[in-house]
Image 1 (cartoon, rainbow, N blue to C red):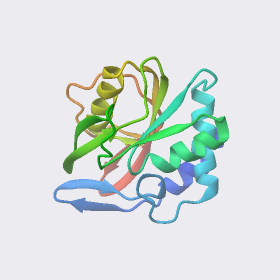
Image 2 (image 1 turned 90 degrees about the horizontal axis):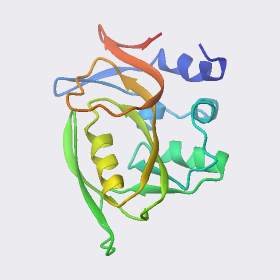
Image 3 (image 1 turned 90 degrees about the vertical axis):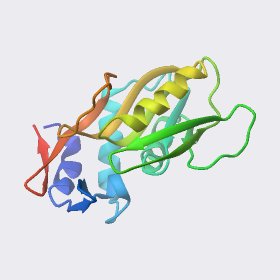
Image 4 (image 1 turned 180 degrees about the vertical axis):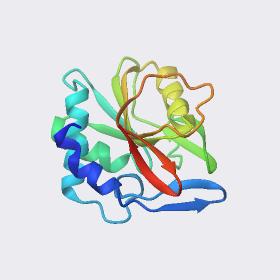
Length: 186
């Protein structure tokens, strides 16, 4: 294991799993903001992303609300790359793009603003589960003419069906829920 990721791996070992209408949902600081998000864990996430992606030619980081925001904030500060949040409410700007998102436990609308034709972007999020949110945001980014440099997530669930999702995603860890516990897949 990459030693820079040890604080993240250690913290994942105690993540509780809750039943959310039949969906095994793990709860962790990097994915939910509760329990507490430890600075060393967030630093490990940023270090892990920086080892895997060259941010030198990236114009903008894009983070879906809500749980991509703290990762994009920390990464923006570390790399000097600005970021924009794909919001859960409309601001009504003329170039705003509405995005319908579906997750394993619900659906809603998201709204993209601040990305222009030709922008080189990295999409930053907490978890790739079904892939529906990431796919919807990627399609919106491509629709406005942005160049998608990479999609980075802290965790990729390998126990979820991602039918129709075939994008390349850079993940720090693959995880699954097994017998009611979160397991890091080595």
